[in-house]
Length: 129
Image (cartoon, rainbow, N blue to C red; front, side, top):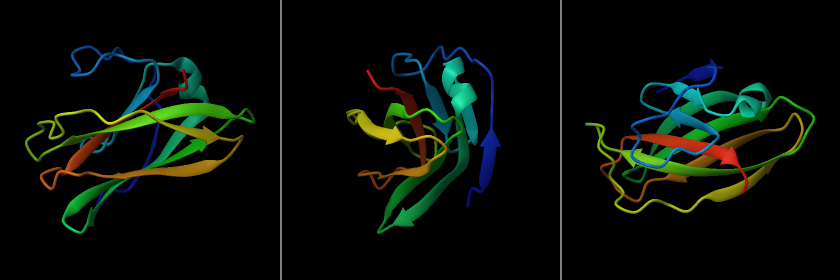
């Protein structure tokens, strides 16, 4: 299983992705990388854990996130699912989900893939519109 990750990568240009680039951060479960495209989130958020678990034949993605500032963060996230060969398995993107991360609070974001071929995920987190 994938274990602890404490990452802080600076600004990274996210060109060539299948979805449009959006301010925020992206987390890739396969490579255990956190890619920030918003310097404010880079300073305020830490990804403490990235994990996948089997759940009745499907894969559950889990990401533990911590707010390192005293300010409340109004954020959105969306999971993207991939098979063992790195191909996206969900034909339709899921909706953005909103969440609030209060000052110095930690939270685990989680989703179960509806496609049993999914083995890895990427999650995108951005400031709420």
